[in-house]
Length: 599
Ligand code: S6P
Image (cartoon, rainbow, N blue to C red; front, side, top):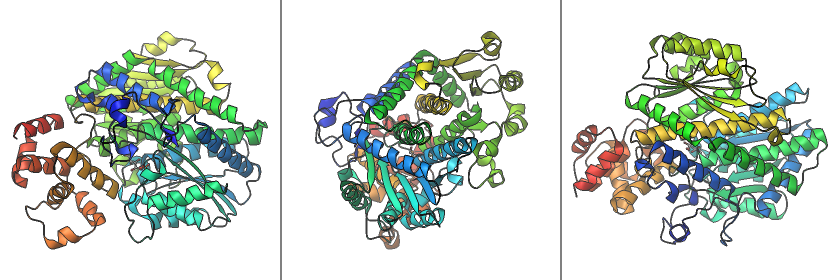
C-alpha cells in the first residue's frame, strides 16, 4: 500500500481525527487554511501536498506503505513483468486500464499514448481504456455510472471478447467505485483469462463497505478477495493512501499518483519487451525517483506559478475566463483540468476551458468526434479562433501549453492572433535543448513559465519525456485552477462544500461535510440534505425510504444542495429563507462564516 504521510503527526495520528473516514476522504492539515492563503502560499501548500506522494517513511505505522516501500515496488515489478509477457506475445491479448472520473481519464491518456507509440513501432496496439459513462466522461463529469457494477462488468466483457489473456488494471483512488468493483469481481470469476490489478490509495480495511445495489459484494469484499489472490501470485494489487489538498478531490494527488504508478509499470514492461532491459526492483525505484525530480523541477517555479494563479483568479473574479490552448497531449491535459473544475468547484462551463490543436483527431478516443454533443465538446483550436477569439478581452487569461517539439511557428501565429485581443497571454513551455531564438518566442507572451528538462532525466527516451511533460503540466494546471477557485472563495477551509451530489460517494461526502461544520448528527444531516435535494420542508415517506441512487438522480438537477442544507441546519431556517440568504453571498466562505455568526 502506498502512503502519503504528513508532518503534523500528532494531529494526523490522533485516533479521533476523522476516524470514520478513509484516508482519501480525510482533510489534509497542510491545506487547512488554504482559503486564507496568498497565491504564493497556495502554491507552496500544494507543492507540499504533492511531495507527500514521494515520502519515504511510513512513520512506524505498519498499516501504511509508501510508494517506495519494498512491497509496493515489488508489486510494480510483478505487474511490469506481466506487461512484458503480453507485449512479447500480443496475439489474443489485451491490457485494459479502467476507472471512473479522473481515474478513467488517466487510463485513457495512457492507453491512447502507448497505443500510438506501439503503432509507430509497427507493433500491435494492445491497450484499451474504459471510463465509466463512455467517452463523454473524458470531457464532462458523468458520476452516475460510477455506481453501476453491472455496467462495469458488462463493458469489460465487451472490450475483451475473443481475448485469451487480459491484464486488467482497475483504478479507484478511494477503493470505492462500484463500477470498478464489478469489473474486478468479473475478473476474479474468470481467472483463466484475466489477471486483475487494483490501484487505489486506501488500505484495504478502509475500502468502502456500503452495500452495492443488485450485488452480493461491496468494494472491501472484492479488495479482500484480491488480497487472497495476491498471496497466490495471481491477483496483483497496488495500493496507497493519500489526503488530498482539497478534501476528497482525487483529481489532484490521486490522479497524479495513478499516472506515476501506471507509467512506471507500463514503461518498465515496454523496456523489457523491446529493449531487453529486464524489470528489476532497483530499476523501478530509479523510475519512481525520476518522477520525484519532475515534481521538484516543476515546483521550482513557485513565483511564476503564483503569478498565474493570481491572473486566473482576477479573470474569474471579473467574470472573465481562463483559456488553455495546448498542443498534443498537453492540450488534452488542459481540457481535462478545465472540465474537472465544474464538478469540483461548482464552476460554470465557460469559466475555465481547454482547447487542443486538431481536437478529436488528437484525442484519438474510441468514440471519435463528439463535437455534435454540444458546447462542452468543442475543443479544437479552430473552434477557439472562430467562437472565442472575437470576444476575447483583457479580463480573460489565456495560457498556451506547448513544448520545444511542437510547431513553434504555429504557436507564434496563434499567439499573435490572441495578442490582438488581449495582452493577458501567458505560456507554460517545456524545453530540452533550448530554443534557437528564445527572445522571439518570449515576445509574444506577457509571461512564459519555462520548464527546462535536463537530459539526464529522460535518458533520450521521447516517450518518457512526454510523460514527464504531461505530469508537470498537470501539476501546474491543477495549481492554477485550484488556486484561482480558492482565491475567489469557492472553498471553505480545505473543503469544497458546494459539491454536486451526483453519486453515492458524493452523497456520503456531503453528509460528512454537514456533520463537520454543524456538529449535527448523521441522521439530522441526512434529513437536511434530503430536504434540500427534494426542495421540501417535510420529507414524504416515499422520499425518506427511497434509495441513494434515486436521491442522487434528483440532486443532479439541483444546485447548491449542501450549502442550503448547511444554512438550514445552522439557523433553523426554511428552504426558501436559506436560498435567499445564500443568494446574498457569492463567496461560500462568507456564507458559511455568516451562517455561523447566526448561532
Ligand atoms: C475527483 C474526481 C472524481 C473521481 C471519481 C473516481 O476529483 O472529481 O471524478 O475521479 O469519482 O474516484 P475513484 O476514487 O474511484 O478513483
